[in-house]
Length: 320
Image (cartoon, rainbow, N blue to C red):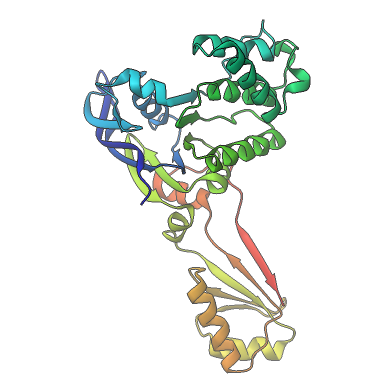
């Protein structure tokens, strides 16, 4: 069984009379990507700061890489890497010099340090720009260098706090590929993001935080299935087939002009099999069917009362 890389129980944090974290529980499995979602001010960054020992919790318990966050601070820090919302690179230094700075801070020996620097420059496709000042780097290059600097210490767990904020779509997808590679290498990723499609693409498990409380938790698919409104859209070759299908599927909604039939469904494989088997039972041929399910934006809106313009709809079209 996969062990837990991060656990928290009853985590609380308040600033004066404002409660930021109101008793949250977490269990992040090792070697997975865990994404914490929530609107601005929900407590995402506070959660990261507590788990990375940058902020003391008011009450509760938390363990990271097996170490108690409150009493084994040094051990926690030795096991983690943190990449914040803004790239923390020194713009007066080159990319290579930024990495070498981290090598020196972690007291890596000369030969080992040089090997690490060269490996990370190649891995993050920064070798050609290694000797240029980072002030000349694009936003995507700075984010890649920032993450590369985090990896110098070979952490078990990486906290990525909104790592792709402000990046163009191409740079975001490059970062996604790097994150997937890190997990394939055995690392655990704790990701906070406001991009719902990012969580959908990357996360093995998602937790939604709102006003300091966890209001939902599960895989992306599990969360989407909690929201009603999913359906299968069937397209037929002619009016006769459409009419026959409507007589069989009495809860469906027809569009006679487009020869379409909309059938309520949770989108599961079992439900799709049952639908197609029923049509086959009556020898009704379907030209095309489209599965349309609620996306994470629908989940976010339902749970928090706020929508995000960053989510992309999830639609799958299957033709014969």
